[in-house]
Each structure stands twice: as C-alpha cells, then as structure tokens.
Amino acid sequence: MYAVIATGGKQYRVQPGETIHVERLNNEQGHARESGAITFDEVLLIADGEQIKLGTPKLAGAKVSAEIVGAGRGEKLIIYKYRRRKGYRRKTGHRQPFTAVKITGISA
Image 1 (cartoon, rainbow, N blue to C red):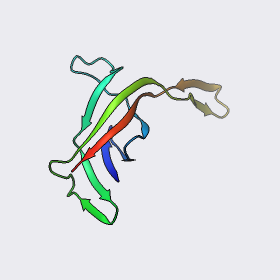
Image 2: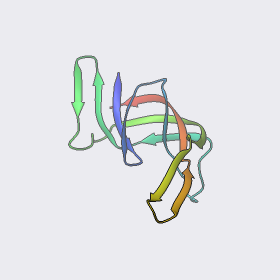
Image 3: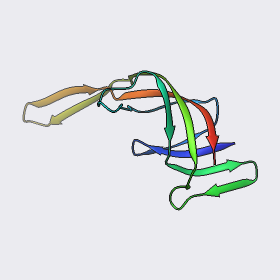
C-alpha cells in the first residue's frame, strides 16, 4: 500500500514505515517542529494492490499519519555569480532546512 501526498509545494510517494525528508514544518507559534505526530490531509492518490483511488485533485477524507523524527539542514549548495572582464565575483552558499518524517499509517 502506498500514497502520494503533497506538502511544501512538492509531491511525495510514501508507504508505512518509510522515513522521508520534507520541507521544514512549523507549529502554531511559527517555530520549527522537532517532535510530535502530524497528519497530512492533502492526499492525491492511494493504491492498495490492484485498487487505485485517485483524487481530483485531493481525496476527500483520506489522511496519512506520520511521526516527526527530527529536523536538520541539507547539503550545502554553492552559488557563484561571475561577470567576465568586470571584476565581479560573488560566492554564497545555501543549506535548505528539512524535517524528517516517519510514515505510520495510511487511511482512506
């Protein structure tokens, strides 16, 4: 059994027991979540063997429950800007924050 969920502007194919990295999730006060349970309501597809339920665009009443395992930052990306013959060089880096989430269950 697997499902396709949408969170943080991206879509993820998940199944129970799997751990995924999603865009950083915030709590009600706006701070980053470090632990706790969460449910994803934007479920786009649920497949169980040969049966496939497809939403238009979301499935009504479908939920994916998960547990927040931790939070961190991804690998550093280097951004380098350069203009030839002008003496213009800029080097910066970026590390995207993420939340590690373990999928505990899928309900249709």
